[in-house]
Image (cartoon, rainbow, N blue to C red):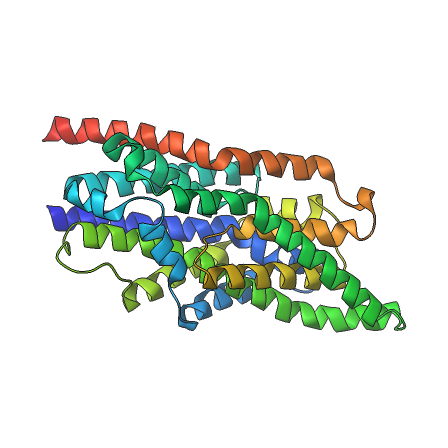
Length: 341
């Protein structure tokens, strides 16, 4: 019975990873589609490939943070296998529900923060506030602000450098060069998406396994977790989330190939660097900041701040909304377990 429950929740975790890729496909390909460098079908295939290739990059710092840096794993494991399963299941369902709602509304919210919010909400009824790792949560919350600002800064910087570098070239030549370079920048951003986002679910799967059927083993990330999570997120990206792609690629600002290259490169470099530090940041927040930064180099009015404001509200509400949903899911699931038991 326990093994069946563990397998089911691992499957749910991989479903979340698929939805993460589906939800965040816009982050990887919105600019390359909006500048018409690639058709939507080719763009999602390109992004999915580099999502998966990131599995072989090495490093699982973000996975360890998600597994042990938000909730007190040792306390949760001590609470017993049933508590572990209920907390993880409720966390995933809270995050999945919020992701699907924001996908439907066409808002590029953060899958990372939805999962973090889900974990926080589901842990509170079981362990209380002492079951949360305050420093880890504070670090994740701080990068809701910092990651888009870093992405914006790098986007602006790259745009200014790129514009200065090619200012003596004809517009046609510049356009041709950066259409080709956008393939590289899109690959960089898709790769960074894989390195950060796929690792988050690895951490969740590890919590389930080492908190239940492998309680006697030390917490670590196995190779099969890495491959399966990257495969799931790549498949999700391949199927894409076109509602959000329209928002990211067209509603924030109008991008030329040079702008798309600068936004993707700035965002991708930011995410890869933070992944190496073990910080589970939002690819959504980072690329949005980079796009806004690139657009702002053409003047304040080049950015549609009304759309940016809608996105900002989605950022603010993601962690508490996912936490609230996960608390409700926990209560309902616990009631069902007690009724059946």
